[in-house]
Image (cartoon, rainbow, N blue to C red):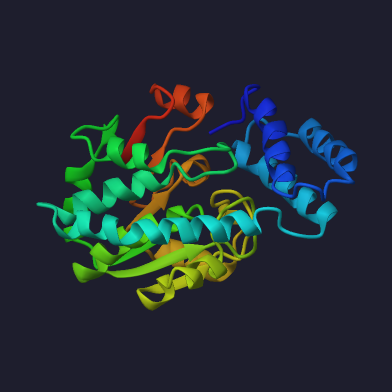
Amino acid sequence: MKTHIECFPCFLRQTVIALKQLYGLQENQQEIFHDVLSIMQKTDMDKPPAYTTTFIHRAIRDRLGLDPFKKIKHAYNAIAMELYPGLKEKVSSSHDPLWTASRLAIAGNIIDFGIFTSIDINASVANALKETIAVDDYESFRKVISETDTVLYLLDNSGEIVFDKLLIEELVRLGKKVKAVVKGSPVLNDVTMEDALQIKLTELCEVVDNGSDAIGTILEWTSPEFQTHFQDSDLIISKGQGNFETITGTEKRTYFLFQAKCDVVSKDLGLSPGSMLLKKS
């Protein structure tokens, strides 16, 4: 994906969302906005928006000296874990647990504080479990999984990681060796090892970090160890819009599970905003 002019207001909106996480700790907000505007002026529009967004959030954290999303990440992991028993029952009682778990993983992608300031998780779950979604390559997904022994699972956001846990549990139950990937350090509300530990994902499968603080997965910014994991993987499950922006077109066998949450991505896909996708590369 390339950056479009419609992305620029979103860059500023994300800055406002980040600062609002801190309530009274915004004395240097003018300096932060000067930093952000300077970064926006240097945007390479031939690259995905995730590049500029990464620079912006680095600048915000550097000015603040802290991660503005730390508290809300922990809170939404806790909220999602309260939903977990009921969601797990939906999977275990389903006629096709893999189908249900994959749809719930897509539902969890609504938890994104880089884009939304309020969310309706229950509505997202209900919509995901409808018979049809905008792009549904599930039959191919199920067939590929049956033929695959190892899965590299690119995680996305906090809170959402609990929904991913449901799908990873089902993959493990099917005998797959899953390697889940978190960010190497905080960025926005993307998951790090701290989130994986909080929801006990580390007790279910191997969890590795990608050595990067980039939005999505910008391969040239990841660690050599992660690049080896990526190249050696039989199948990649990619969660979230940021990962779609940055690795779509890869030659690796990949399935993208996400909701199209902005007009630019929706237009690029020829879909309406809010569309749910289980899309093969």
